[in-house]
Image 1 (cartoon, rainbow, N blue to C red):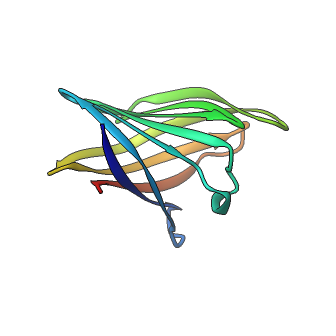
Image 2: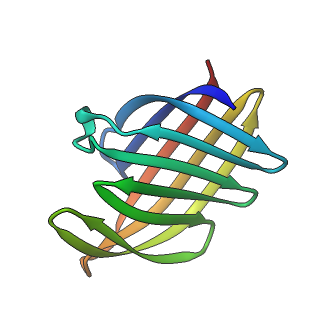
Length: 135
């Protein structure tokens, strides 16, 4: 297990990005990696634990704690999931348009372009970049 820095930049298409930095751990086995970190008060998600599971051609983001959700990012694939919060549960649909997972020395660089539909509303385009580096 390695200590890692996780830098995430996320935005709706044509809007400025929101950038956050976390510190967590990473375990690797062959083509797979498991990155774990705790969300912060700054994002309004204190009490939420996040796992990034890199599995060859796709990425899973699993949230537990005050939020329960499992999102699967796989290019050209649509994923339906429930996003459970203390105040209720939302149905969401995630369609990954583009996913690039690059191995970089001791970490990863991930780029995702996806559409997210929340509670039946029209889907919105989003870009996310995740950079994972060993501490």
